[in-house]
Amino acid sequence: MQRMTTLAIDCGGGGIKGSVLDEAGTMRAHPIRVPTPYPLPTALFVQTLVDLAHQLPKAERATVGLPGMIRHGVVVTTPHYVTRSGPRTRVLPELVEQWEGFDAKSALTEALGMEVRVLNDAEVHGAGVIAGQGLELVMTLGTGLGCAIFDGSRLAPHLELSQAPVRWGLSYDTYIGEHERRRLGDALWSRRVGRMVEGLRPVFLWDRLYLGGGNSRHITPNVLAKLGDDVVIVPNSAALVGGARVWQLLID
Image (cartoon, rainbow, N blue to C red; front, side, top):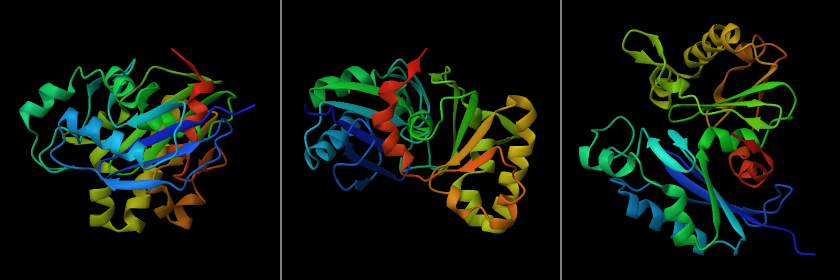
């Protein structure tokens, strides 16, 4: 019997990557990555994903992870794709108008010709790593900060933790994002990660915290040793593996 295959696409601020996986999350094709084009109207976004899919083996269904607040496949808000040339550049009002309320699920279902799930990128990442036991929090460290919460195998409604203030005028997205890592260097940036974990622990009281995303590998050994046994570093490949496993989740 032929196993169901999933086209998994992880959309980031700097790049969009995709692969095809079987139901167990095993990749059936080498991942392909293309730079995120800017400016990025919704039509160009859809076409970019279609072009990426054409470079990969045919799949029966697709999962797309996007930065920002996604509800039932509809974009409520997204931080990067409304800018002129990428993160930390000028926001274009005409792109805000296009993206806010954009039914990405319907548009991609029609363009790709298959059933599609569109979720926040951290939620897809989390689907690739959670054990399905207790309250599990996933935070992804990349261009900014991603967050997803799971209770057992049930995905909780999305929380944009990245927009919460660390202090007046400074959000977690900025405090822990790639721009600050480059400015501070890995050692000082890693100390920020440690302070974030300790500050949020009494807020969530998680059973397990997973730190993923492309920048999790930059956390220094000294900080890693202090994070505690309830914190696990996970590979960025989970962003694609989760594309297959997300179909097994219970989603509110």
